[in-house]
Length: 188
Image (cartoon, rainbow, N blue to C red; front, side, top):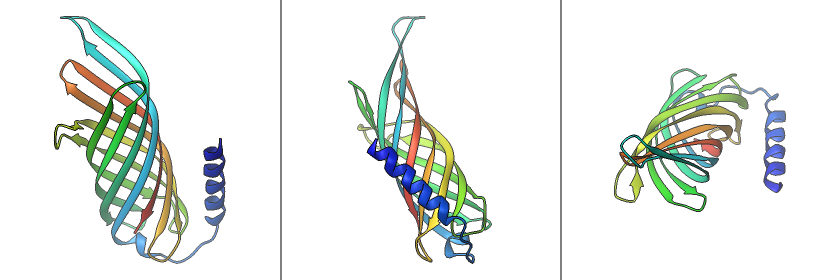
């Protein structure tokens, strides 16, 4: 309940600051970096082949912590394109823990040419198996957020959206993890 109150208060403060117009800032042209932390709440939809034509399906809740960094360029002062890497840790309730190393493309559209504005984002990529402790699988998501400038070179990003991860530990064991994603980051 405390987190919901804090998140709501933060969104109200940022929304009220959107009304203040300023000139174009550094983040609306050229190279950028976004570093963000995420927390996802979801469901592990697991299908395991138990016979020639029989499958077992289970559903369990999942909590995920994510750390990602995105590097890219503003194509216009409203549209940015980047490439990101990151690490996501999926904790299945009463079950396994999966690490993933993400490599993905990121597209963002900023609705207004202002210091503080709403934006929409989408990402698509793959979790790469870099060693035995990391799992592979397709990943993607999208959502909306608020960009609020905290200095001429730095903006605070707060977003809410959908994220999905597929995990294939072996061909007979496939997992799909759809999640609601909350992210906080800095745009440099």
